[in-house]
Length: 497
Image 1 (tube, helix red, strand yellow):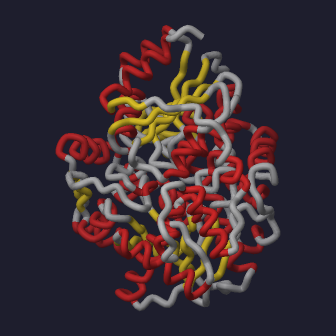
Image 2: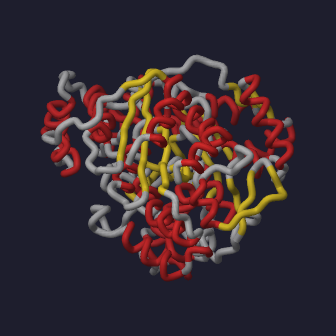
């Protein structure tokens, strides 16, 4: 299995190199030369544990790590120390038409745990396979959940340091507390005066900068990323789409010849891209439903074929989706355009220079056969939380609620009777104000008091992760201008160890 850049068909690298370096040298994203052939027949998968399924799927994507190393990594990542259920990603059925795949049972209570519990092991193994002697410096931009999951995953891993940048006013109070109170001697958390796109663009520019490549070489440092631009982050997400299918069959929710829709709250496009790849590999997914909040650049693309990031940026009650430049979208375009690297280079250059790109009418027609996109307002998000709790006694976080609201719009427009699975991306208690608003609870300044009120009303105990967070001291308080990100990284690379 070799990997190539979305922007260049000629140069290929092995999987361990791609994991180690994250971004291709030409600024593109690594994709497999050919997607692996894996027999995803239900009869093969039905009795596998999550760990066994992960190995069965991922060994094809990371062959250079060796079977024993990969098995050990998977077993270390997915166990009762990191997840509070042996299923890892259980399916909860709301009614005959709708289920949810719960991806919030990991140590940071968000779907990023499903990949970032494994990724540190993949990166460490890749470093060994590549005989890399340099220290690894991970740069990560986060809109909320990636930051904490990456920090926790790489906490005190030898030979690796991590810097996380997040928008100061663009995450929930719980997300910010989780990052600012992070333990570990190799972690650094920096708030920026700007939004997530500012942080993400700065990080990608640093990765592509010749100046920084030279600086790293002089200081025995190698960059890597914990964002889903890295294949070590992206491909482990395929696994829970495979297990979702198996769980639906095992529970009798769908039958042998039935397909199912997938509804994904979508910001950076990595989660729904994993669903797209799972479908290409044989999982019987029918419609891929991309659910955005008021930062609806993706919703507009799926309706018009034009991706235009020149628009207002909104800070919403679903902050992990407050993104206008979806970094994994480039990989999707690569497949949509027939794996045409030169076309991708042209489209991405146009997006960077003119803030827009467009596919052809024929391409849009094909896209709309497979994808549906829409968005939910903040009020619609809160209404969905309220509606689902009232009807099913099930409390959703605001990102999952965006998915529910968009699914309702899709079903109303299409009349589709196919069973739909909403990807539930976070524990509702990570966003206490949205949940409290939906349940008509009085707002309090202290988010932990809000959680106590929610727990009293809903009967859902406060997860131990948030209970412990209450009393931890704040460790990080640096705030910088978005234009100072490069200077900050430069100083970190050159500072005395």
